Image 1 (cartoon, rainbow, N blue to C red):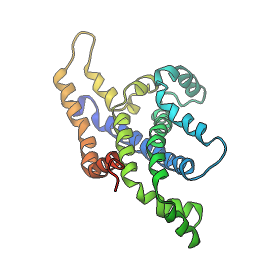
Image 2: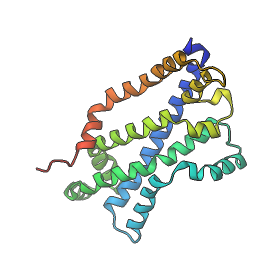
Image 3: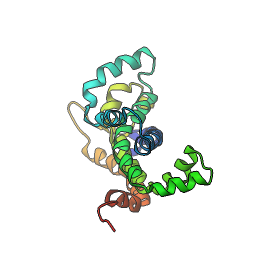
Image 4: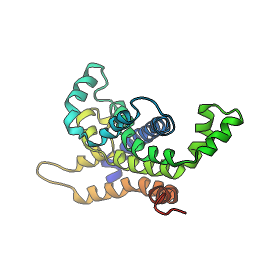
Length: 218
């Protein structure tokens, strides 16, 4: 009954689409930014890093009004792509915070050896450095993926079309002014956590390694 009345098959598809695209885009951009900030020295590097990380301390409620107006002007309001764009942007600060430290402690000898063999900057990044940061990347993907999957506020403000709604919005259909279907809400929540549990089981080892890396020296 929860599956049918909450239209979970549609809302879950939308949530999977928004979360996957948001995680992939934000993590990819964060990897590129973090590598540049960690491995290259240039004027303004520290202020630029602080500017990226500063995105973590800006509450989305503070900037939602200009975002709403901007998306309305570019005719993106009401579409699923509105939150996909925001997920892709809002996921970058956490990625930069975590990945910059990981890229920064990688041995420079590996980079020098690759350069001697004729590797370009991008080849060093793609073939040497990026595989070594897989635990950190997995941690960033899970942390960002969980909040994107569970996000209610952005979807509630920006999505107006029923066929574009995400899971949290679909579950809220069971909450009414005079009555609330708690059984159906709990059933829907149980269904909604299954993909997150599966993702954690698949990436759990990398996630733990990413959180504990650097805790022991030797």
